[in-house]
Image: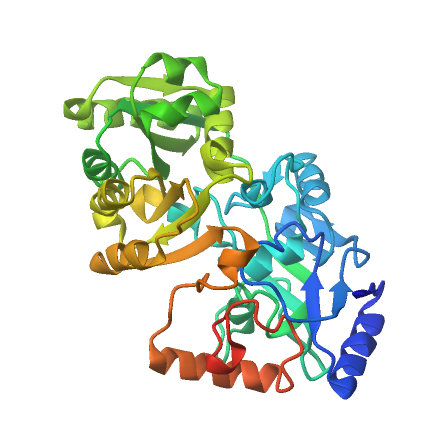
Length: 413
């Protein structure tokens, strides 16, 4: 039977990890557990549950800084930010909805968000979640306290541990305190929709928009059969696949830039505009990957250079028979496959042909036990990552196997 350890203070967390180190007992580290199906199953009989390490430690809206315990829910944090008309600028999505049916809005914790470095459509303009992490406090796999950063963004020398911890999936240390930069919500937001059924042409349109002076804050392409899942009548009425381009800022500037984008991209197809409410609804659905939410079908996340995103999406759809959706101006492609074959070799070969990588986000547990979830690393990089992991967690007690089928073959952070 799995034993659950639920610390309520940083001191209890340190004691729990110290016990695991001494006893050589591996730990599966979770917050709400909403992302347990992302990655490989953890080889551990003990669960380190951080869901009771909660609370806002300080929030200073004028200074644009927020510090919370790692187990604090995203729903609570975002409600606090909305009261001051502020937000996480990297635009979090409801990622757990991709892994299971009937997942609550904004499920998950801030610790899980940073540990997996999940970021939404605005990443193309403002960076990833890791770029908004000001600092953290954590306990390493040695059972030792360590921290990085503070309450302001500044230039650093030496190791930037905040960047290292973001995306490490809890394999280097367990964060208990997280300090984030927050930003004011924009005055206005509108979205230009361009009718386009061809992913290659969609890629060309997004590249042209991103290369213009119109400061696009999000760019995506949705296939015609998926547009209805967004629940926006204006979008559905266009009856085609859609290139979507968002602009944000002062109202006069937003209106001018939308008009400029429609003129710039007139040759690609007819256009429409979504104003504030519909625009927000549309990009929430993009962040959540709403067309592919739930638990059915294999789901790949393919990343590559945005300049070749349209070509890569077209290749993936043609050779796998799957459905594709593009975000980040083509730098992030979601590929859904029906059936029981993940087609890992084919998907990764296509990704690499365009200098990209592929991660298997959703698949049954038995298949994730056979197919590497994360893209295979270059051997030299794997050796570096293994040395980093061994320095932070020499006994290998934190989420063993989460990022690799065989943890002895080299880690990935």
